[in-house]
Image (cartoon, rainbow, N blue to C red; front, side, top):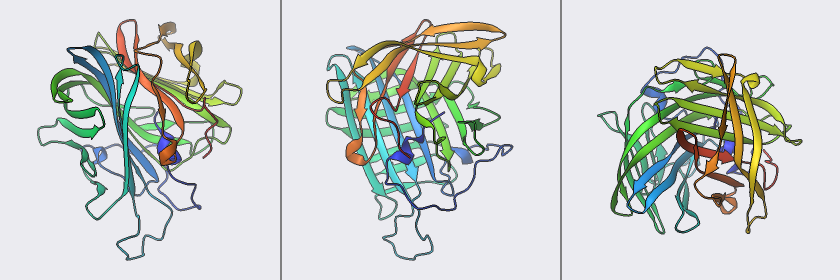
Length: 344
């Protein structure tokens, strides 16, 4: 899907002219691994599972780029033509909750930037980039959290929706350009100790807000043990139903099925209530996707219940995002709009 969270991280801005998302625009690589500064916002979102001596851990590394509504013709070096912000989190069952770090800075002055033409996003000493050998690399650190990881592709990217044009609602223009890169093989260090694992990259860019009736969304990305990959999402209304839904399934042979709203079911299962925000999160949903006319049900189990992330200090929402498993697979679940409706 994913994620319009970047639009929430800055104050609402005046109307501006940003590049529209249109169907029929082919994605091109490596250029589309890089930044798209003509669009309002985009994100590079890496999530995955690590194998450590203490057991399995979930992690996320996220970089956002947002273009404020300003006069870009202003020659001043202090004009924030682009703003970069980033999150990193570790799901650590031993701690019982997320270890989390965040940064934000305007582009320029050597503080932050996002390269056009290939993947290279920087924010102070945090970085996510693609090397000449085709591997992705990430370095982020915070209190009790230091990740230095390399991601080796084992499969091709998935063009979500209609060849990378992914609808997010019933209205015209409610869409993004979107691709995913599942089954990335991970090797590197967590807090100085060697780790391995698997990961998933989500890349999205858009200039369009959610449908005005939307209060939040649910998203799930799964690396299945047999080599297949599953993406599911729904955009929710105030009544809890789906304003829009979709996703994809790519089987182990590489055959892609694009899922329409009629092909996705999402039911709340077990709930967890945060002692901090008091929000109730449906952390054990039962999701289902229809393949070849048959429904396949996937009950979701979180690595731990408390994977709530509070980004209000940087202008964002309280949301839940964490490592989860299903029968025959592992991935990441994102839930928004349960602490309070999203206002964009």
